[in-house]
Length: 199
Ligand code: IMP
Image (cartoon, rainbow, N blue to C red; front, side):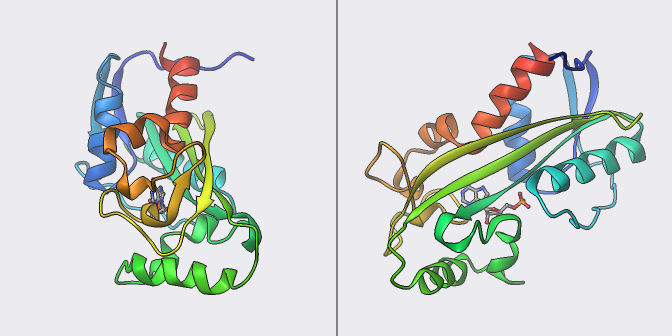
């Protein structure tokens, strides 16, 4: 399948989260991109009304691309728990409430799981590169693992303390961040995007 290539120049990172913007800038250092964030440009944040990770990544990237008339990159991610039919999924951030209380969100997962034996889950990341003419290139990355209670570790963020990736016996929150970044759902989506549109 042929993909549209990023030809250099300005690239908007459609995120107002400085941590995410920094990580994306680092990942794009080898390419000819003049990276600037939607926050720096004061672009409005669209409401995430999509029903899938891909729909949300595309609506965020397209809104920024059309507003700023430049190529834009957006991601949408979350934790999908098998025994909860994929919840919290696209609502992962919202399960933490207005105070972004992830202890609360992790306890909610534990209580909704109850005695259900299936502890498998995956982190999912959809990444979209969008052009002002409406063209989108979208890639999805995943990392599979097992939910682990009680939560362990103080590195990382979000649901990292209850997620043990397959093939490991420590949670993402106990893992060296560089190691996590090398195997994460975001890294998986990025390597697909880079191979298709930047390499
Ligand atoms: P987004 O900014 O809308 O993509 O929100 C994603 C939400 O999913 C975050 O607030 C976290 O709750 C969760 N999430 C996504 N990626 C990770 C991760 O790598 N570790 C832990 N939680 C994550």
